[in-house]
Amino acid sequence: MMKAMTSKEVTKKVFNKEPFFILDVRNETDFNDWKIEGENFEYLNIPYFDLLDGVEEILDKVPTDKEVLVVCAKEGSSVMVAEMLEEAGREVSYLQGGMKAWSEHLEPVKVGDLKDGGAMYQFVRIGKGCLSYAVVSNGEVALIDATRMTDVYLDFAKELGVEIKHVFDTHLHADHISGGRIIAEATGATYWLPPKDADEVTFSYQSLEDGNNVKIGETNIDINALYTPGHTIGSTSFVVDEKYLLSGDILFIDSIGRPDLAGKAEDWVADLRNSLYTRYKQLSDELVVLPAHFMIIEELNEDGSVSEKLGTLFAKNHGLNIEDEAEFRRLVTENLPPQPNAYQEIRETNMGKISPDEEKQREMEIGPNRCAVR
Image: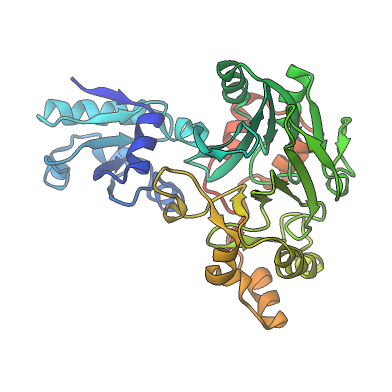
């Protein structure tokens, strides 16, 4: 029987590096722009419209010795193609909810323990490359860079029996819609935002500034705010428990943050370099860097998490090893990937200026992560 495969099931295959075959029936442009990625995945992209008369011509290209998943944008087309393959004697699955569901799936991964009790969790948004965090201690939790899939975080807190007390955004996001304010309103938590990113916001917030210390739980778990502009003028990093560095969109595992999503690339290059090459250099090499995004599937660790020690990144990340300032400036102003889909509308949504409905928000976020410079 043909079966639906959930995004969670596919995520496990990504984490486990399983051999897998994907027949993607979206058009070629969409497939080339953004697809389900896995280290041992194989792909065949045949647009649905080319299969309306049957699948006979592609049967020799679809393997029989590994699992096959049919993927489309919303689900419907993949179901029809999967049914045709089933009728031709092949055993296949289709992706439940299509790429829209893939874009929205969050997989919680425990990163590690905190020294006085509690734990750090990372939510991996596998299809979008977004990473968000929960710092749990003594019945309380702080969320950092939460996405708009707010139920995931609320259910997570309920399952652990903890109360959401604080919600932080490291900066005003431009590639995805923040769920921070909605979670704070639903739970009575304090919502923190860097004030230099909040000039145009339409709602109240707690000002997150350099030197802020916010305790979570009864144990001594300080969330220390470190002003690190460059991706945005307000970008703020956090040092949690003297162990974890939440770098926002300033520093990634294999790349660094882009400075142009508010139209200020030339203005913010110096800030970006100073944050990375001076402020971060003053921190311990033993800090575990937890970024707000990943760019390529190879950045995932064996357990599916995304992290690396700061000292290792200073040794291996190209963006941290450009001695010539002019060369650095060229990298982050002339070598930029396309800007995220609807990034201006996303910024306005995160400012509270516009309130698109859920379907519109989905459309605004469709596509890959484009916050980095490599």
